Length: 182
Image (tube, rainbow, N blue to C red; front, side, top):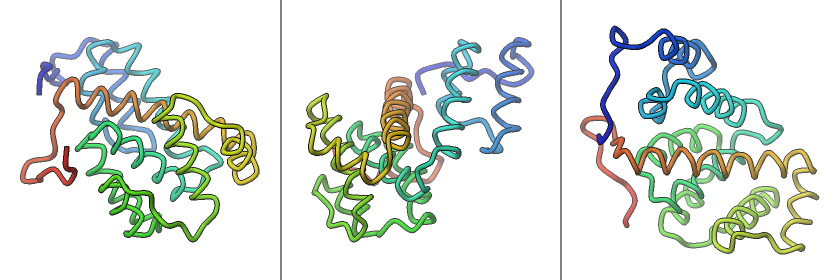
């Protein structure tokens, strides 16, 4: 890891509040990127609150959120993010063949048109930095306007997470090996 670990006994009062808020929330622990963000406790507090909302409280069902997170993790080749969210995606019912296709940078076959809309929207935005009107309209039809806004939020937040994990080389848990090819 390329950033110092701040042990609980060495935390400032602001850092302690941020760490405790994260651990007492829906995650039940301090999320991995907060190991870096804790160096800026206000940033860390705001980012982790946004992340908690985007992970647990949007109108997107968990399988769709996890699909968007995996597309983002794969784009950034964020090994830690992939490691965590592949397991969450499987728990949420995402088809393992879809996960494998994303890992291999292939377009998956989707049985659920909502999942196809999420994937197409995510890939358009990530690859071209924009979304063609037909893809946008398909997402709004499948997810509603609020769901489409939340999808963009999930994609943006998990890009931040992936960038943080990659920039500060926050690695996999001990004994785990990367699942993604470069």
